[in-house]
Image (cartoon, rainbow, N blue to C red; front, side, top):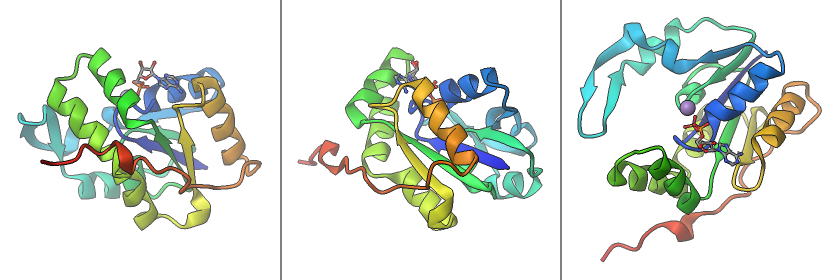
Length: 170
Ligand code: ADP
Ligand code: MN
């Protein structure tokens, strides 16, 4: 079983992956796998640009948890989308020292369900679990992901609407 954990930066992917690793699961961090596929830098967004199609095609199917905001581009058996209320996500990222513009951009992407939408486009409904880290602790998320991987927790998504966190444009 290859289970992906995706989500906007700051939703808690690395934290829940570390908890799953403590519980004995094999964890692959996507950031460790992109080295050969970097095509350049995006200084405006302070990120590396990768050839994600070539990266996804070369990614070996593995038994374990694959963590990172590109996990939903891989052919995982199941995929978990972590969510976080946009205003809280913004403060998590500010605390991390991200520039204001990057925090706002990610909070807006979260309010617009960008990662969930990309996931729903690629996966069948019965392979997707959406978890709200606004109300679930890291440990609770890890428990649910374990249950989901074992087929004890049914798939579910679509219960979140954060569109009212979008800042109205003048
Ligand atoms: P990501 O890997 O998705 O960017 P991180 O795991 O680095 O996110 O978490 C970002 C911040 O949010 C960290 O400060 C972390 O402690 C906090 N955090 C993560 N998950 C939760 C949670 N379920 N509840 C409360 N805080 C969380
Ligand atoms: Mn992370």
